[in-house]
Image (tube, rainbow, N blue to C red):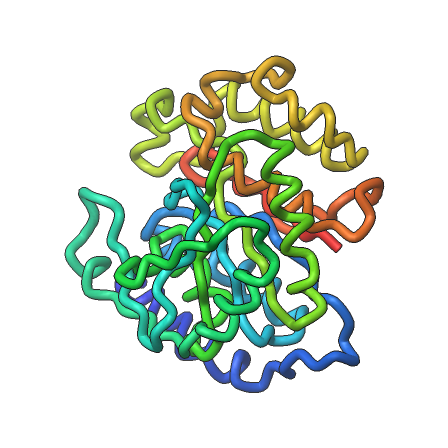
Length: 285
């Protein structure tokens, strides 16, 4: 099967399953929050990864809306994206096949979610009326909600400070009780400058720095050791190669701050490697 037909085949079997997904109701209780490795457009050519994301979403009620905090939108003061129906996509990548720049993912109006988010912020929430959904949002959501039938809003990443990001997650926690799925979108390792030619050619074999950072993070997550995770710059093996810039790890701390019980370990849902980078993705209750 060639690359372009993988997405078509996925959509053929995924859309009926998503159509049958029960929608969230208050009786379901608070939705969890997710930290996902979001991948670049080639994720859409990875049948295994697409299936993992779809299966994950189908184990949950279909949310009323999705709020995404993506590694690809860093701005302060904190802001939200455009809210109109069929918000355009941001093709914030280069060097890929032309077909990726023609993909669309029209979603419903998200104005109600923007109003709810603004009510939880202590400062004025800025709205970027022309800011579309970047690939940290629309690429994984095409797999998780292939019908595009859930309103999607992005919230900017205002800082890289782990404690402040956990505090932001805590402020957003009431949204979980309203049927909003909050997705923190990054990558547990993201040392693109240090990947080998074999990794760039598609090998999933992880470099030592990626493997070491992933193992350290997995242990800290399993023990809910938030202090250890927050000190990753000084304590994590594989630094700074695993994160020469930290924007792909920063969303993790928003997800951790959303936990109802800070002492409870999140659930590991996806692991493995993509081009040698850690796909580890977690669910926070």
